[in-house]
Length: 354
Ligand code: ADP
Ligand code: MG
Image (cartoon, rainbow, N blue to C red; front, side, top):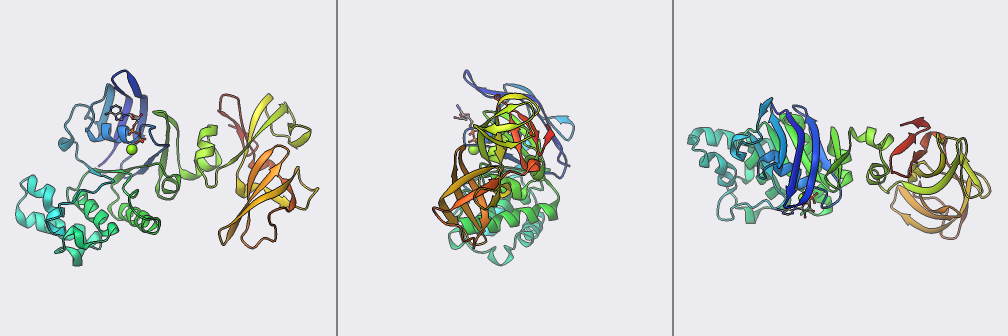
């Protein structure tokens, strides 16, 4: 079991309110990702759940029982850190068994659990090596092994892949996802990287300034961001934002009418993702512009298009003939438009009121 319930959890350091009050339910077996910019309180929230920090107020329940004042060791959770701090003089086997040895578990049970964890993590043939004889990814797996053998009701990961190079990160992302699929144990995973959040999570919790901006599945956040912050944070490259005016029916940038989706009159912000802007011949579409930069990635190319309403990033085919200096027309499909009020709250997404 690994159901975790936070009720009005607050944390301040001195007179700084880092977490002003959070309500959150994590279901048994879920893969939940806390994502947000650096300093938004992700690690603090995870450490509160782990019991490494005391709450200022509020309650944390684990599997229905109040755990707010339980010491970390009594919560049945296992934490995996970014710096994996293995003992360099011990073998992989001894490193993985370490928490069990500390708990006084009989040797035979220790050995059985280490074998099982090593099998899940593909570390069986490395058990007699020392950490210094392993790659970065293998060391990270040993650190995860040390958590698995405790058979926790939930795993807590704090940016476990940040120290790895890009290729290894992709591989470890897959391994942790597969680990979750085979163990089916609750995992809470902290990252500042929205790609990790999108690719790994069942449920994403977007944090900003210690508050929850939105909780939802990756595609819910992608299609129906509740705020401009979430809209800009989820998806890469970021959503384009333009300042526009609405007369209650039509929306326009200056003299250019872009669409008819606005529910309220006044100044609003229009959002559209790079992959949703249509590229047309010059003169066609809603807005004309000039390509000022092209970034070719292979399958895709990103065109930076300067328009009267501001610069937009537009996704094109990697082998598009459009280059620096090309004139284009841009179209804005109504079902792809997002509108945000002056307070940053979504007014409509895909033509439907939020
Ligand atoms: P994140 O993990 O999202 O980058 P943290 O949870 O580490 O953010 O930090 C959130 C905020 O709390 C930051 O402003 C940080 O400076 C502050 N903070 C974290 N730990 C402490 C502490 N022990 N004392 C004072 N301030 C802290
Ligand atoms: Mg952190």
